[in-house]
Length: 460
Image (cartoon, rainbow, N blue to C red):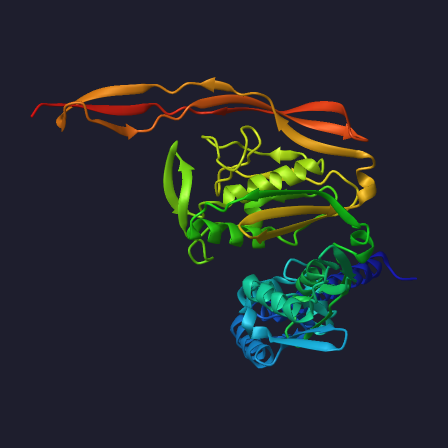
């Protein structure tokens, strides 16, 4: 048997050996950890393995190297990249660089450098050795105006406007031409799809399919075929007009002729004529302006609006805007006229029927005439007439002024007095020739204009 001393010596040897082994293991672990730490630290300024930007591998690259590589790739791809839009059998192409793309390479590279740097030491080593493929997308901006120009250019070449049905009336004979459908590019959808495809990826063309839609005509042959005759007519005489005034009337009549007013739509006289200008052929003729009679471009066209007003009211097309003159018009009874001023006063009526209205306007022998066409069944057995009651006179005053420069007893009327009036108008409904209703239409006031008479007091 071993003695007590020998047993103690043996135990000490085992303890010493164990301690030495532990020290060796710890030293080896420290050495191993230190070597890993040094290895990982060498990648602190490098991009980990597997990290890409827009598919370009940047493994092991420094920031400067990555930025340089991306700039080179950007120039190589963007110069050749195209934006392609296909619409049926047509192909439209735009150089990608036209939209001036600007890429934020700096931010993307910084993100690439940061990837994995927040992980533990062993995880970092794993990413460095064989990290998974990780793609970072580039943020970028571009000139949207250039993209919009491209979209509009495509639309201008693709769109085919529909053609409304038309009606032609000659001597009461009615002929209707059928409408034609058109096509229109769905510009909102194209814009949405293009912007969806406009990513930071630069190594492939952008290809988008454009969608077209059928564009139907607003006016159809079926609708216009309901027009079968004259609902109402009215004429006024302008035989005493000057050549300039007659010229203006002829231009205004031409602007109104052939206008179609669909059910629910509103006809605007100013809208039909537009601004009265020399370029359109209008000339200066007398008008009422600021309670004075002066020459101005387009003088006389209120006779045309008045004639149309009377014809439309006979067709039971009531005015939604109408104004009387400041003074009595020579061509119209009080309360039955319709004056207009560009940008201020208009004559408008709404088509309250369920069929279209066609306006025929003409001049002949210094007479302006309007025929309102529609479905004759719409009037039934009724007819309509615009009338006014007996006006109330607002007498004008005459001021007498002594003039020492005129011979005694001589009288000169400087300003002719013009009486004012108040008058009510009504739309009378007749059925089978008998009055069945009388509707108040307007209560008009025509201003008076006081006169001035000079009386001579100079003695010989």
